[in-house]
Length: 76
Image (cartoon, rainbow, N blue to C red):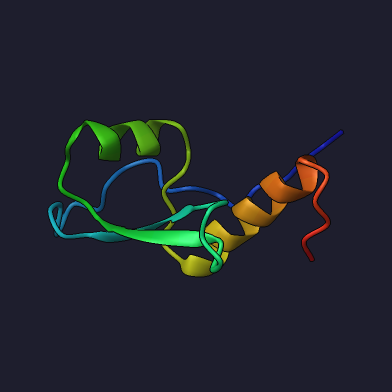
């Protein structure tokens, strides 16, 4: 099975580093994503390392839809 996810952000933009808005897939949200402001803490860094930070809501939603589909939930 070949799954293509949107390209996540792999590094924080140079300016601004703090306060940068990013989006993550969220299977618990009715919107399928959550919004965060980068503060550089361990959670931010872990999400970045795991490929869960996106510059757009649409990419985070697409990632979440793929996760739900893999779980057997048809979310189109």
